Each structure stands twice: as C-alpha cells, then as structure tokens.
Image (tube, rainbow, N blue to C red; front, side, top):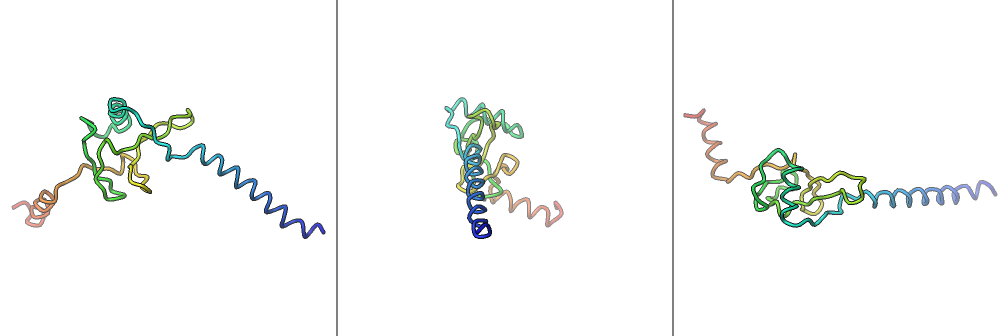
Length: 124
C-alpha cells in the first residue's frame, strides 16, 4: 500500500513546489512596466541609460535583438514598484527582453552603403 501512495505523494509535493515557484515568479515578473509621465520617463532614460544623451522621448534607437527601431516613448521602465527590484529599461517589442546594452543608434542605409564603399576601396 505504501508503494501505491508514493507516486501520489510525489505528485502532490511537486504541485505544491510548482505553485510556490509560480507565486514567487509572478512577484518578480519583469513584465510589470511603470507608466511615468513624460518628464519622469525622460529622467529615467537619462539615469538608467548613461551610454547616450537623451535629448527627448522622440530619440530613436535600433534594437539589435528584435531588429526594430524604437523611441524613448516606446521603451519600458520596469521594476522598482515593490522595492525588491531595481528600475531598468527594456524594449517594448513583445517577447524582446533587450536592454540598453543591446541598442545602437540607427544608421540610414545610404550611410551604410557609403561606409561599405570606402572600406572596399581602402578609403580612396
């Protein structure tokens, strides 16, 4: 009889542990973005992304992960609401979890062609 109860006890224990992890996971979910006003969002971009000068929320960057161009208005400010996670920035594209380290300034295709030609011709 003890051997027939063992799988039942094991699955009940697994369910309890899985439920506990699901509860903890939802508490730390990185998807809970904050909706600050325009001035606060610009201040957050400047504070959390020191690698570039944010002049306005319309400044645009290219996400190297999802291959989309995003603006400061679209970037999400995430975390910080419960005091357990630091504020950070993330791409707003669904399923993309890139951060400022993954963003570069967008380059126009004409500029890319010109650079390519100069390098192929050794700058001549």
